[in-house]
Length: 302
Image 1 (tube, one colour):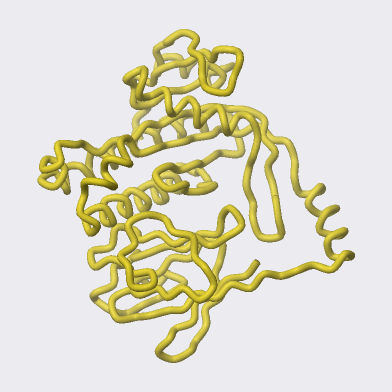
Image 2: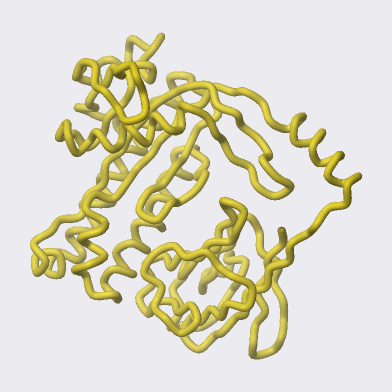
């Protein structure tokens, strides 16, 4: 599947990358030299067999088919995006394969997918449904967009790959599992919490009006996953450890902990034990056996 943006003003075309940033910064793939456009205004990311559009907390916002973008939206062929006065049409081309191509793709896919041990991080905004119902659309767009932007930058800074954003959550991973990468995962978790505090402080008057804060839970786990090219254009990871990490994140509400990790995250890493407090075994949805869970009580310095 290929995607492109066509500038409606001059019919020029930009082929989309797996991650495309739109904005005033000269490094943006879609560069828009307009002071009303933020430096990193919006993002288009290919995931789940489609292109998804995210406003990155821009001051003036983004429109999709004339409506303000408040959270991630999957683009459809012919959709119109507007940033300030700059309008773009999204075009998507599905690439059907012949039987021979499918046979070649099948063998290539098998060759590309491998089993690998990874560190997995999941973070999810708490109370997102209530935020969506109570925040004015402009404030919701800025808040969630800022969270998308901060997550993307924080995780990249700490060496993680963002697999996908799923509405109000993010899935990321490290493809090596040594002490250095586990420290990086703890540092990233700390910075994600800090980002939420910063967002709350910047929008405190709005949050106070709806009597709600802004925070996120974070979960860390480690395990063997199927990792590689799941299609001609998508590179991702799947497997039970991914599902378990999402389940662990949901426990942050019940256990009153901002960051939880599985005991497996600390295996063969005695130095890391100073950062945790054992919370015992807990049952998680979809699993017969309980899981040993740890709360992260301190973080390594950045």
